Length: 505
Image (cartoon, rainbow, N blue to C red; front, side):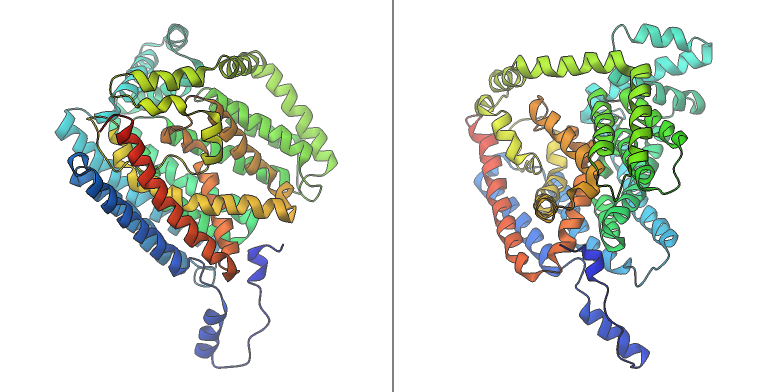
C-alpha cells in the first residue's frame, strides 16, 4: 500500500491559464477533511444528546455542560475542516510558517479555556481548583513545599522529607511547580499559562513526528486534530500533571524518532532523550517504563530502512547502560509492582469496590480486561447524564470524549492498514509507545478513566489522521465510517443507560 502523501503526487497539469490550473488541481485533489466526516459526527452527537436527555430528563446534564459539549463538537468538526483546508500545503508552503500558525491556533483556545475555568472555579468554589480539588490541591501544596525549600536553601531535605509520604511518580511535577512558584511568588496563573504553552508546543511536535512518518498532509491533519481536541484545552486549565506528561511523552517520541531516522548520528544524541525519559520517570513511572522499553524495542525491531545495524548497537548499548545506572532498581521495583497488581487481581477488586461504594454502579463488577481490551482505543464514552453531584469533569468533557470516540475509528483503521501493508515496522517507535501504554492501561484500575488516557492521545490522533488520509483517497471506505458513526450513537446510548441502570435510576 502506498503512502497517502505519495498518492497526492500528480502528473503535470495541462498548459492553461493560472486560475484554470488552480481550479483543475483543486478538483483533482481529494478533500483532506471530507464533508461527510463532519456531517456524520455532528448529527450523531446531537441525536445522542437529545435521545439521552429525553430518556433521562430528570437527570439531564445542566445547560452549561450541554453547551460545553456542543461547543467542543462544533469547534472541532466545523473549524477543524476549515483549518485543514486553510493550512493545506498548497496554501502555506513553508513548514516554519505552518508551525507558527498551528501554534497560535492551538494556544488561543487553551488560553481562553484556562481563563474561563479559572474564573468559574473562583466564583463557584472559592478557589482555583474547583471539582478537581483533591489531586490539584495536593500538587499545589507540594509545589508550595518545594518553593519554600528553594527560598530557604533546603531543597534536598524537602525532597527527602517528601519521599516519605509521596511516590516518585508525583515528585517531578511537584518539584516543577515548586520552581515556578519560587520564581513567581506562588502564582497559580503562571503555572497554567505554562500549561497552555507546553500543550501548544506538543501540537508542533506531533506535526513534525507525523510529517516524518506519514508525509506533509497527514502531519498537518494530525496537528489540527491535536490543536482542536477539547480535552487538551481542559487539562491546560487545571492544576493536574497531565499536560506536562503529554508534552514530555511527545518530546521523547519525537526526538527519539528523529534520532533513529537521522543520517548524521552520534552517540551523544541518545543521552538527552534518556534524560527526557528520566523526567517522565518522576511524573508517571509506568509511562517512563513504557517509553524506555519502546525505544529499545524500536531499535531492535525497526526496519533496516529506518535504523541501520550500527545505530542499533550504539543506541541499544547506551540505553541499557544508562537505564541500569540511573533507574535500574526503581524500574525493577515498578515492574514487579505492576505484575503483582495484575496477578493479585487489583483491577477486579477495584471494580467490585466501585460497584458497592456510595453512588457506585452495580454493573462495574462485571468490567475487566476482557471488556476494556477491545474498547481501549475508544473509551470512555460521553457522560450525558447527571445521576448525582459528582463526575463533573466527565460531564464537562462529554463533547471531547465523543470526538475521541469518532476518531478512534480512524485510529483502528490505520492499525489494520499498517498491519496489512507490512509497513508497521517503519513506524515502530510511536506504535510501540502507544500500544505499550494501552496494554498497561487495560490491566490497570484506570482503564476507563479519561484522565489516564491523556499521555498517548497525541499518538492516537496522529494515527487517526493517517487513517483519514487513506480513507479520503479510497471512497469505498466511506461507508465503513458511516457504520462507525452509527455504532458510536448506539454506544453513547448504551453507556448512559449503563450509568443510570447500574444505580437503579
